[in-house]
Image 1 (cartoon, rainbow, N blue to C red):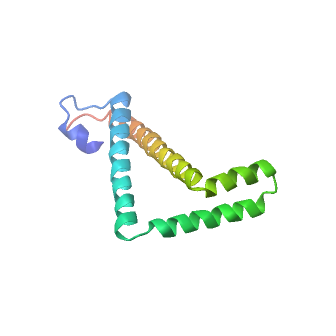
Image 2 (image 1 turned 30 degrees about the vertical axis):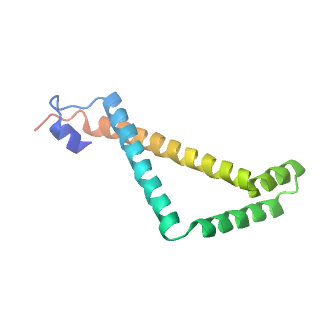
Image 3 (image 1 turned 135 degrees about the horizontal axis):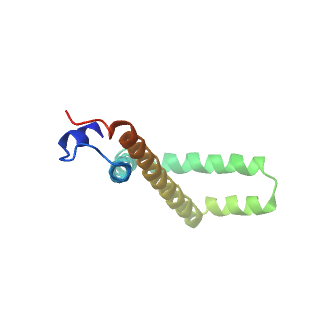
Length: 119
């Protein structure tokens, strides 16, 4: 935020501009995170280990929850289609958290740093 303000012609950054900067940086951050994750799975063959850990966590969740509907849902997540759905759901949740948290950070940064006069 301070680096952008230094380059900005106007000097002050509005809350809206801070939020937009935050969401763009969150999008870039997610892309970098996703690329690193994909490379780690492909290069280090971590996909099988990730799947085994997720299946172990699902087994533990099934053991803790006696509800038949929850058991059916967890059993679906253990299938290849369910596991794919679960991974896509987690990816979307991570993307949304990147975007929301960086937007809030940009908004707060604009509030704290945006009103100082340009030096």
